[in-house]
Structure formats: C-alpha cells, structure tokens
Amino acid sequence: MSSPPDPFDARQDLADAPRVGGRQTPKDAATLILTRRLRGRDQVLMGRRAPGHVFMASKWVFPGGRIERADFSAAFATAPSSDVLGRLSREMPARRARALALTAVRETFEETGLLLAASAPVASVAGPWREFRAEGALPDLAALAYVARAVTPPGRTRRFDARFFMAPAEALLHPEPTAGSGELDEIAWLDLDDARDQDLPAITRFVLGEVHERLATPDRPLPFVRMVRGRHVVDRLD
Image (cartoon, helix red, strand yellow):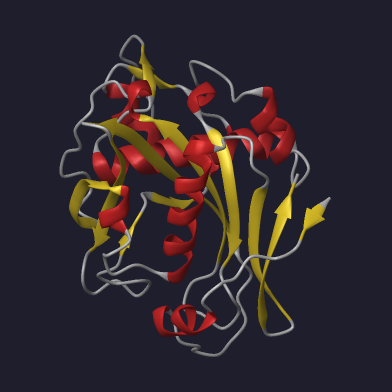
C-alpha cells in the first residue's frame, strides 16, 4: 500500500548527475546511516567523496556501495530483524536481502573503518571480507533498520537500486572513524542540522530529512524514490 508522493527536488538531482546517454541497468547497492545523540543533538556519520570520482565527486554522502558476490556467503553474528527481512523480502529473495544488509556493513567498514559488529574470533578468509574478519568481528545485522529505497534516474554515469539502512552508534565496536579506504577524503559525525548545509546530492538531502523524521517516528512508512515517465515519484510503502 502506498500514500501520496513527497516533494523531491528534481532540478538539484539533474545538477548532481547530468545525463550522459546510454542505457544502464541499476545495480543493487546498500548504504548505512549511523546516528548518535551527543550533548542533546542528533548526529549522523557522513563522508565527502574524493574529487575526481566519476559519480558524485566532492559530495557529502553516507557510506555505501554495490553488492558483491562474497556478500551472499559472508558469516554474521546476528540476522536482520523479522521486520527488515519482511520488508526486503517483498522486493527480493531472503538470501539477497541478507546479502544487501551485509553489503551496508562491509562498505561502511571499508570506507570509514567502523564495525557494526559483535566481537568474534579472528578468522582468515579470502576476498572483500578479509580485513573485516581480521579485526575479530562478525556483522551485527540485527542492529539495522530498513528506512528508504532509491533508484538512480536513467542516463547517469552510474545507476544503483540503493537500499538505505540505519543503525545507532551504540551498536559499533568503537565510535570513531578511521581513514578507511580513501574513497572518502573527509569523514565526520555531523549535527543533523549542520549536515543539511553541506554540498549534498539531492537524494542524500531527501534521506537526511527522512532520518530527522524517523528519529521521532521510527515506524513511519518507507519512501521509495524513482523516476517514472521522466518525473520523480516518491511512494510511501507500509
């Protein structure tokens, strides 16, 4: 079931990622929005993408990236909640739903050094999970809430079908980011109000507003942002 669409700044979206022609099928991706409350103010973890990136260079974003084959078989300490799996399973098989949750955790570690995880014995594995498991940790997927979905409009240099997850900083093994992989040239906890003043992609600005509302009303319907017949549509999914 859906409710009336929300406003979306399509002009800003076009400025963020001008059309380049050609057809691309959106790739599944996942993003993690970490939140904390410090001295009475809500904060979010964000990073600025390094200059020179083909996609959203120098913009402030949440950590995230596309799904990898290894995410389908990666081990985890806790499974996603029944609510998260239930919502995602309306869109895809449960195995892919868990893989996307793992993508969000892995990409956040790669880009910020932060571990949404439980302590575990150090393990030696190959592939993109090698450094994560070397930290003595397993992903804590139960800490995730599924809060938004957005598909990059056609004709962009990169297209993603992105699922946005949210988790509290209390679920991290340590609270402060490191340099990460270098994809983000600056990483910081930003006051929610200050974050809106940064150079943001249109979808990130929209999701920040959603975070603000969701901190007060956690069970609000999930927004699904996409382009239909040349116009942005934001549906609310119960």
